[in-house]
Image (cartoon, rainbow, N blue to C red; front, side):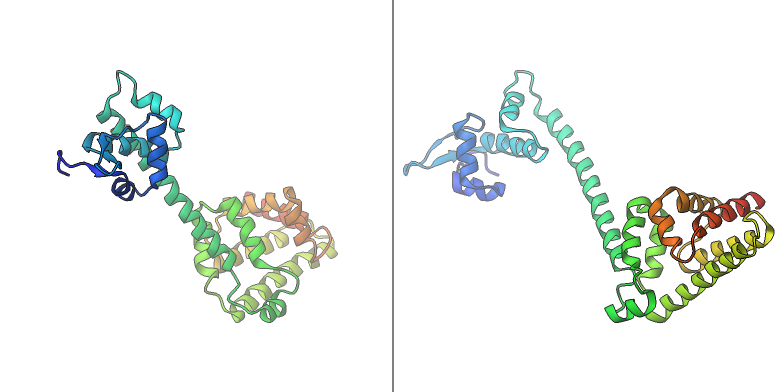
Length: 255
């Protein structure tokens, strides 16, 4: 930019990506004063004023109110270079947070789409009243920043109706095995129940993510500590969640 060039308020507003009214307000409160006026009475801004406006807008982007910005830039010890460096650091920090938020939104969108490549009729046929997308949102809230969740979303978003039907059938068969053991009085810590718990862990690894013994044990605890999980699991049979949780814990101890 030429140091001898003055620009009208309209030109400067367009350069800054703000309205003329914003610049007028900065003038009115003494924050950015124009260097003079044109023959037609328009406010003119030289290089110094444009640089000050730039600093003001940086502060505004960081959330500072105009009155506070004025106090900062009018301080006798104000160091433009030091302030710009700090502003740059803060903007990079903000950019990192924004990018992290974008990733989170992308993951949430993927979570919401889990199973939604099925029509409403297909969803009803495969899952009945159970909506996997609702549980995907719960998983996003709890584990959205984990590799396991990312892997689960990567897999499930591509599943077809047949995939979901197979997944559900295997899960139902495992639940039924637990219920049969419960019915004949086999304790959850017995080898037969632990073997079914291990099949449950393998089922998760096959369809969702690599479910380690530690992750599986944590899931077993959630099955009884979170009433939403307990209620959902116990739809297959009263007391199933508690039995599964105990069997999973025993299997983890055995491993």
